Length: 374
Image 1 (cartoon, helix red, strand yellow):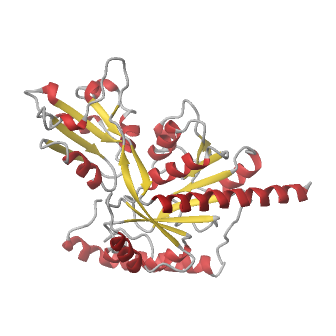
Image 2: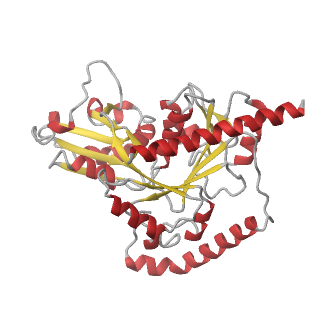
């Protein structure tokens, strides 16, 4: 399902949204009054999540934290492994497939093979095993865990899309809200994501005022930074295309995406070409042969040498699971890596110091506690 929905469907689905809202409110209330248990752990835990479904850039922000922390500590990333075809506790290894752990964990594992990537639908169980069996893990990053109330993280990071303020959203299924805006109180850090590169201070202040953070919450702003186009199927002789040449050479660019919000991806490509054709699928879409046939139908058949098929980094993980021979012009398929950057240098230093100090201080507490148990 893609959002925003047409007005007709919002009206039709609004009764179900009310039911969903009540159920979520009761669940959070039961956690708040401690009817449902909340577990704390000795290992430092940083949770990244949002109040809406998809599209806020969780994976690039998790990768930002991985890059920051792996230089100093043994890092593990813990995810439920959305839409994986396995169950239970699983640690990614050299031969692990995207079907076994899910596309986002596979992407992180592929990028950072020295970092433990773990999937388990039961986060409490997984964290217990990490503490008991993995002495080299010194900090755990929980991916998409803002709604996972059973674990109390040391730092909770809430992501909000800059162009989609929460005030405009409806509850599921009529809208994208997973829970009440008031639950923002659980966040220690709030990040407005996918911001314009040149965001004026007055625009930042307006967003902060609209969000109305609590005194204990720090607010930051990040933007997407796209890297060089990378072959989907690396092999000798394939040259990376320069996007700046697409318009000059009258190339046809087929943008392939199965993510929650492909708008920034399309916007980035549109600045380089007048011949953009899009093949958009639902988030986490499991690509099939028929999808590749549809994508191939969008290409310029008269000038195949001018076709470029460009997908997102997350989609690349799922596309690689298909046999290469199914792809139209497989040597002309590329994916676009993406990272995040904090807009202001002073804010970047403040944010990174806050994360590092938290882990450092809790490493000391952990060692003291372990020493007292001996």
